[in-house]
Length: 386
Image 1 (tube, helix red, strand yellow):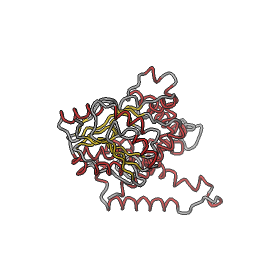
Image 2 (cartoon, rainbow, N blue to C red; image 1 turned 30 degrees about the horizontal axis):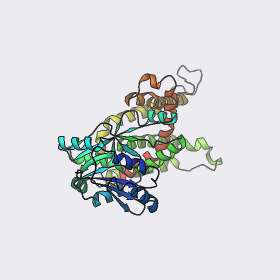
Image 3 (cartoon, rainbow, N blue to C red; image 1 turned 30 degrees about the vertical axis):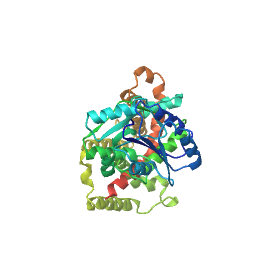
Image 4 (spheres, rainbow, N blue to C red; image 1 turned 90 degrees about the vertical axis):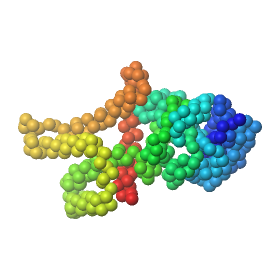
C-alpha cells in the first residue's frame, strides 16, 4: 500500500525535463499515493507526457495561469489529499531511496518537516568551475526534496507568491524560526541543470538577486553592501565637481554635497521613524568589520594629500596608493571565491591548483559584481519594509 504522500511539482516549460523526473519517481523504493503537477505552460505537451506515465504512478495534472514556483507549491499543498506533502522541481532528480529515507527521518525524529538535500552535478568544464566558486562539491539544503506534514505547512509555511527566485530560501528560514521540529538529510537529490555559459549564469544571478530583493533572505549581506555603497558615495560626492571639471562640464552639479547630506539625514530620519534599526543588532561584528574597512579606505584615499602634501619627495608619499588598495580588495574577493569557497565546500587542494582557482576566482568576482544591484535594492527595501 502506498504511503499517504503527495509529491508537488511546479512545471513551466519543462517538456524536456519532466519525463526524466517522472521516471525517477516511478523508480522510488517507496511509491507516493499521488503526484500533483502544477502546470503553467503548454497544456497539451505536458498532458501527453503525464498520460504516458499513468500506468506506473497516479498523476493529477493541474493547469493554471502562468505563476512562479512559490504560488504553484501553495496550490499543490492546498489541493493535496494526503497527510504528507513532498516537493520536487523538474530540474531536481531524486535518488531511489529519497522518499523512504525522508519518511524514516521524519518519523524517527518526530519532526514536522524533513528538508531536502541536493548535490549539484556538473558535466562540462565550465560547470565544474562554476560549482567550485558557488555551489560547492558538498550537498546543500534545499526545498526540492523536502517532506512535511500538510497541516503544518498550511498553517505556518505558505510560500511568497510574487517572486521568481529565493522564495524557497525565505521559506526555509521562516520555518526554522517557527519551530525546532525539523530535520535535514544527506544528499538524496541531484541537480543537473547548471548554467552552460557565463552569460547564462550572469543573467540568472541578476534576475535572482532582483527578485530576492523583495524577500528577507541574505539580509546581513544586503545591509553590509548598502553600508559600503553609501560610504563610497560619501567619498565620491564631495569630489564630483572637481572630477568632471566644475562649471565648464555638462555634468557639473551645484550644491551636490549639500544635497547628498540632506539625503543622508532624510534616510536616517525614515529609518529611525519606522524603528527598523533594532533588527540589525546581530550585525555588530560585521558592522565593526565594515567600519574598519571604511576607515582604512578613507585613510588610503586621503593619505598623499594629508600626510605627504602631494609631494613626491616626501617620505610618506606612496604612488598609486588608491589603485593599490582597490587591487587589494579585488584580490581579496578573488582569493575568497577561487580558494576559500572551494576549500570549505568539499574540494581538495589538488582540485583547485595549479590553475583552476584562477578561473573560479575570476568567475566568482564577475558574479558578485552582477549581484550587487540586487543586493543594494534589497537592502533599501528591507530597511523600509514594515
